[in-house]
Image (cartoon, rainbow, N blue to C red; front, side):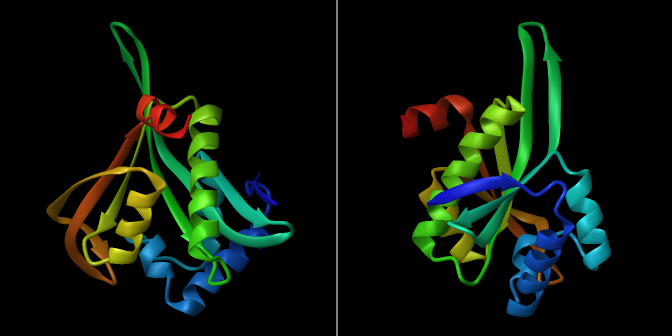
Length: 171
């Protein structure tokens, strides 16, 4: 059974996730604009707004995270938006990653009371772009020289989804 659980108080799983991504060459795909070590990754995970692990039965298969939550106080009420990202373990297949991603998006919209989510994906990361489309996000771009990937500045797509769009696509 596929479930998601908070990793806020679980630095051991954060460490396992990061070191596995690092060892498999996937760390630069998840942490595009971030260069750090294990200590800074654990500190980052403690400070962000939302970080949950995906589990298939008791097997840890990946992470979804939401950061940079912004609440805008407008004339017609409060509007909220945040940046989302994913990183999956090598033992996670595409179907599991898609199902996990959908669970995480639904949960993050609900738990954080978000109106909108977005993310950035380097144009060279075709695997991640395909994943984002299959999860259901819209893509805009590429925007030239917008992000970093493998140590180089390059163009990026912006993925985006409103709560309304998500609800219409998934209910």
